[in-house]
Length: 261
Image: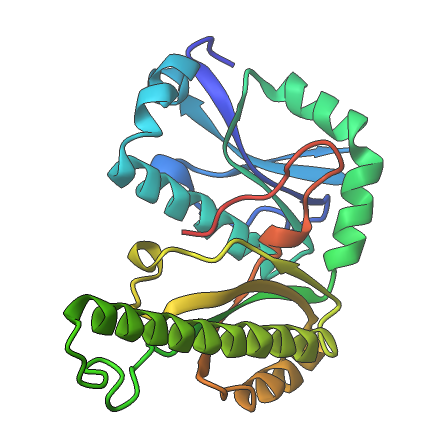
Protein backbone atom coordinates (compact mmCIF):
# COMPACT_ATOMS: atom_id res chain seq x y z
CA UNK A 1 0.00 0.00 0.00
CA UNK A 2 1.42 3.45 -0.88
CA UNK A 3 2.79 5.41 2.07
CA UNK A 4 0.51 8.33 1.27
CA UNK A 5 -2.65 6.24 1.86
CA UNK A 6 -4.40 5.22 5.05
CA UNK A 7 -7.10 2.69 5.86
CA UNK A 8 -10.50 4.16 6.84
CA UNK A 9 -12.49 1.58 8.80
CA UNK A 10 -16.31 1.61 8.75
CA UNK A 11 -17.43 -1.56 10.48
CA UNK A 12 -16.68 -5.16 11.33
CA UNK A 13 -18.94 -8.06 10.43
CA UNK A 14 -18.81 -11.78 9.83
CA UNK A 15 -16.65 -12.98 6.95
CA UNK A 16 -19.20 -14.15 4.39
CA UNK A 17 -19.40 -13.95 0.61
CA UNK A 18 -21.76 -10.94 0.68
CA UNK A 19 -19.75 -9.02 3.31
CA UNK A 20 -18.99 -6.22 0.82
CA UNK A 21 -21.83 -5.16 -1.52
CA UNK A 22 -20.58 -4.76 -5.06
CA UNK A 23 -20.05 -1.16 -6.16
CA UNK A 24 -20.44 0.27 -2.65
CA UNK A 25 -18.72 3.61 -2.05
CA UNK A 26 -18.01 5.42 1.20
CA UNK A 27 -16.27 8.59 2.34
CA UNK A 28 -15.21 10.93 -0.48
CA UNK A 29 -16.90 8.54 -2.93
CA UNK A 30 -14.10 5.98 -2.49
CA UNK A 31 -14.73 2.26 -3.15
CA UNK A 32 -15.25 0.00 -0.14
CA UNK A 33 -13.13 -3.10 0.35
CA UNK A 34 -13.34 -6.11 2.64
CA UNK A 35 -10.52 -7.72 4.60
CA UNK A 36 -11.38 -11.19 5.92
CA UNK A 37 -9.45 -12.54 8.90
CA UNK A 38 -10.26 -15.32 11.40
CA UNK A 39 -13.95 -15.43 10.54
CA UNK A 40 -14.43 -11.66 10.64
CA UNK A 41 -14.45 -9.03 7.91
CA UNK A 42 -13.34 -5.41 8.19
CA UNK A 43 -14.99 -3.00 5.72
CA UNK A 44 -12.68 -0.16 4.75
CA UNK A 45 -11.55 2.31 2.11
CA UNK A 46 -8.06 3.38 1.13
CA UNK A 47 -7.98 7.13 1.78
CA UNK A 48 -5.40 9.80 0.96
CA UNK A 49 -3.51 10.93 4.05
CA UNK A 50 -3.49 14.41 2.54
CA UNK A 51 -7.18 14.50 3.57
CA UNK A 52 -7.34 11.93 6.36
CA UNK A 53 -3.94 12.27 7.98
CA UNK A 54 -3.70 13.30 11.62
CA UNK A 55 -2.70 16.92 11.04
CA UNK A 56 -5.33 17.54 8.35
CA UNK A 57 -8.06 15.87 10.40
CA UNK A 58 -7.50 18.29 13.27
CA UNK A 59 -8.64 21.08 10.95
CA UNK A 60 -11.24 19.08 9.02
CA UNK A 61 -13.13 18.01 12.16
CA UNK A 62 -13.97 21.68 12.73
CA UNK A 63 -15.39 22.02 9.20
CA UNK A 64 -19.08 21.18 9.57
CA UNK A 65 -19.71 20.69 5.86
CA UNK A 66 -16.79 18.26 5.57
CA UNK A 67 -17.85 16.48 8.73
CA UNK A 68 -21.44 16.09 7.53
CA UNK A 69 -20.35 14.72 4.15
CA UNK A 70 -17.95 12.28 5.81
CA UNK A 71 -20.60 11.15 8.29
CA UNK A 72 -23.04 10.48 5.46
CA UNK A 73 -20.49 8.45 3.53
CA UNK A 74 -19.71 6.47 6.68
CA UNK A 75 -23.38 5.93 7.46
CA UNK A 76 -24.12 4.82 3.90
CA UNK A 77 -21.62 1.96 4.18
CA UNK A 78 -22.79 0.87 7.63
CA UNK A 79 -26.46 0.85 6.64
CA UNK A 80 -25.83 -1.10 3.42
CA UNK A 81 -23.88 -3.69 5.36
CA UNK A 82 -26.39 -3.90 8.22
CA UNK A 83 -29.19 -4.75 5.78
CA UNK A 84 -27.37 -8.02 4.99
CA UNK A 85 -25.31 -9.05 8.02
CA UNK A 86 -24.92 -8.36 11.76
CA UNK A 87 -22.75 -5.25 11.89
CA UNK A 88 -20.54 -3.54 14.45
CA UNK A 89 -19.98 0.07 13.29
CA UNK A 90 -16.79 1.74 14.47
CA UNK A 91 -16.28 5.37 15.39
CA UNK A 92 -16.45 8.03 12.72
CA UNK A 93 -13.06 8.80 11.14
CA UNK A 94 -11.17 5.75 12.41
CA UNK A 95 -8.03 5.60 10.26
CA UNK A 96 -5.23 3.02 10.40
CA UNK A 97 -1.81 3.02 8.76
CA UNK A 98 -2.34 -0.22 6.85
CA UNK A 99 -4.11 -3.54 6.50
CA UNK A 100 -1.71 -5.18 8.97
CA UNK A 101 -3.16 -2.96 11.69
CA UNK A 102 -6.65 -4.15 10.77
CA UNK A 103 -5.54 -7.77 11.09
CA UNK A 104 -4.07 -7.03 14.52
CA UNK A 105 -7.34 -5.37 15.54
CA UNK A 106 -9.33 -8.44 14.46
CA UNK A 107 -6.86 -10.67 16.29
CA UNK A 108 -6.82 -8.72 19.55
CA UNK A 109 -10.56 -7.99 19.74
CA UNK A 110 -11.90 -11.07 17.99
CA UNK A 111 -13.85 -12.43 20.98
CA UNK A 112 -15.33 -9.00 21.66
CA UNK A 113 -16.45 -8.54 18.06
CA UNK A 114 -17.95 -12.05 17.94
CA UNK A 115 -19.94 -11.34 21.12
CA UNK A 116 -21.20 -7.99 19.81
CA UNK A 117 -22.21 -9.43 16.44
CA UNK A 118 -24.09 -12.26 18.14
CA UNK A 119 -25.89 -9.74 20.36
CA UNK A 120 -27.12 -7.54 17.50
CA UNK A 121 -27.92 -10.32 15.01
CA UNK A 122 -31.54 -10.04 13.86
CA UNK A 123 -31.98 -6.74 15.70
CA UNK A 124 -32.10 -3.06 14.77
CA UNK A 125 -31.77 0.23 16.61
CA UNK A 126 -34.71 2.60 16.94
CA UNK A 127 -34.40 6.17 18.22
CA UNK A 128 -37.17 7.65 20.35
CA UNK A 129 -37.36 11.27 21.39
CA UNK A 130 -39.97 12.80 23.68
CA UNK A 131 -40.72 16.51 23.88
CA UNK A 132 -42.53 18.53 26.54
CA UNK A 133 -45.16 20.82 25.08
CA UNK A 134 -44.37 24.54 25.60
CA UNK A 135 -45.51 25.95 28.92
CA UNK A 136 -48.48 28.30 28.71
CA UNK A 137 -49.32 30.49 31.66
CA UNK A 138 -52.76 30.25 33.22
CA UNK A 139 -55.23 33.12 32.73
CA UNK A 140 -54.31 35.94 35.06
CA UNK A 141 -50.92 34.48 35.89
CA UNK A 142 -48.97 37.01 33.84
CA UNK A 143 -51.03 40.01 34.86
CA UNK A 144 -51.53 38.95 38.48
CA UNK A 145 -53.73 40.74 41.03
CA UNK A 146 -53.66 44.50 41.27
CA UNK A 147 -51.13 45.65 43.84
CA UNK A 148 -50.08 49.15 44.80
CA UNK A 149 -46.52 47.90 45.17
CA UNK A 150 -45.36 47.15 41.59
CA UNK A 151 -42.17 45.40 42.71
CA UNK A 152 -44.04 42.97 44.94
CA UNK A 153 -46.64 42.28 42.26
CA UNK A 154 -43.87 41.44 39.79
CA UNK A 155 -42.26 39.00 42.23
CA UNK A 156 -45.60 37.28 42.82
CA UNK A 157 -46.15 36.88 39.09
CA UNK A 158 -42.61 35.63 38.65
CA UNK A 159 -42.99 33.09 41.46
CA UNK A 160 -46.29 31.81 40.06
CA UNK A 161 -44.78 31.38 36.61
CA UNK A 162 -41.82 29.44 37.96
CA UNK A 163 -44.08 27.16 39.97
CA UNK A 164 -46.17 26.50 36.88
CA UNK A 165 -43.14 25.68 34.74
CA UNK A 166 -41.70 23.44 37.44
CA UNK A 167 -44.97 21.50 37.68
CA UNK A 168 -45.08 21.05 33.90
CA UNK A 169 -41.46 19.87 33.89
CA UNK A 170 -42.11 17.33 36.67
CA UNK A 171 -45.08 15.89 34.78
CA UNK A 172 -43.08 15.70 31.55
CA UNK A 173 -40.13 14.01 33.27
CA UNK A 174 -42.44 11.45 34.88
CA UNK A 175 -44.09 10.80 31.52
CA UNK A 176 -40.70 10.35 29.85
CA UNK A 177 -39.77 7.74 32.46
CA UNK A 178 -43.08 5.97 31.82
CA UNK A 179 -42.39 6.00 28.05
CA UNK A 180 -38.94 4.50 28.56
CA UNK A 181 -40.23 1.73 30.82
CA UNK A 182 -43.03 0.88 28.38
CA UNK A 183 -40.59 0.62 25.46
CA UNK A 184 -38.21 -1.52 27.51
CA UNK A 185 -41.00 -4.08 27.88
CA UNK A 186 -40.51 -4.79 24.14
CA UNK A 187 -36.88 -3.83 23.49
CA UNK A 188 -33.95 -6.13 24.16
CA UNK A 189 -31.83 -3.26 25.45
CA UNK A 190 -32.05 0.51 25.81
CA UNK A 191 -29.68 3.45 26.07
CA UNK A 192 -30.56 6.91 27.37
CA UNK A 193 -28.53 9.65 25.68
CA UNK A 194 -28.19 13.27 26.72
CA UNK A 195 -31.15 15.39 25.68
CA UNK A 196 -30.44 17.64 22.71
CA UNK A 197 -30.53 21.41 22.87
CA UNK A 198 -33.39 22.94 20.79
CA UNK A 199 -30.76 24.34 18.40
CA UNK A 200 -29.74 20.76 17.56
CA UNK A 201 -33.17 19.13 17.68
CA UNK A 202 -34.69 21.86 15.51
CA UNK A 203 -37.78 22.02 17.73
CA UNK A 204 -38.94 24.65 20.20
CA UNK A 205 -40.16 22.07 22.70
CA UNK A 206 -37.84 20.86 25.44
CA UNK A 207 -36.54 17.33 24.87
CA UNK A 208 -37.17 15.14 27.91
CA UNK A 209 -36.17 11.76 26.45
CA UNK A 210 -33.47 10.83 23.94
CA UNK A 211 -33.42 7.05 23.87
CA UNK A 212 -32.01 4.32 21.65
CA UNK A 213 -33.59 0.87 21.70
CA UNK A 214 -32.34 -2.44 20.36
CA UNK A 215 -35.36 -4.32 19.04
CA UNK A 216 -35.79 -7.78 17.52
CA UNK A 217 -36.75 -7.33 13.88
CA UNK A 218 -39.83 -9.54 14.30
CA UNK A 219 -41.06 -7.24 17.12
CA UNK A 220 -40.58 -3.94 15.30
CA UNK A 221 -44.31 -3.56 14.57
CA UNK A 222 -45.14 -4.27 18.21
CA UNK A 223 -42.58 -1.69 19.33
CA UNK A 224 -44.14 0.89 17.01
CA UNK A 225 -47.66 0.11 18.26
CA UNK A 226 -46.62 0.50 21.90
CA UNK A 227 -44.99 3.83 21.13
CA UNK A 228 -48.10 5.00 19.28
CA UNK A 229 -50.09 4.99 22.52
CA UNK A 230 -47.58 6.91 24.64
CA UNK A 231 -48.37 10.53 23.78
CA UNK A 232 -49.94 12.33 26.73
CA UNK A 233 -49.44 14.42 29.87
CA UNK A 234 -48.04 17.25 27.78
CA UNK A 235 -45.49 15.03 26.03
CA UNK A 236 -45.23 14.06 22.35
CA UNK A 237 -43.04 11.20 21.16
CA UNK A 238 -41.12 10.74 17.91
CA UNK A 239 -39.79 7.49 16.41
CA UNK A 240 -36.90 7.26 13.92
CA UNK A 241 -35.37 4.12 12.44
CA UNK A 242 -34.54 1.39 11.96
CA UNK A 243 -30.80 1.93 11.97
CA UNK A 244 -27.71 -0.19 12.31
CA UNK A 245 -27.08 -0.72 16.06
CA UNK A 246 -24.79 2.25 16.60
CA UNK A 247 -25.56 2.54 20.32
CA UNK A 248 -25.08 -1.14 21.16
CA UNK A 249 -21.74 -2.11 19.67
CA UNK A 250 -19.26 -0.39 21.99
CA UNK A 251 -16.40 -2.70 22.94
CA UNK A 252 -15.23 -2.75 26.55
CA UNK A 253 -12.50 -0.16 26.94
CA UNK A 254 -12.98 1.23 23.44
CA UNK A 255 -15.90 3.01 21.74
CA UNK A 256 -16.66 1.02 18.58
CA UNK A 257 -19.70 2.77 17.22
CA UNK A 258 -20.15 5.25 14.44
CA UNK A 259 -22.30 8.34 14.28
CA UNK A 260 -25.45 8.54 12.21
CA UNK A 261 -25.75 11.91 10.46
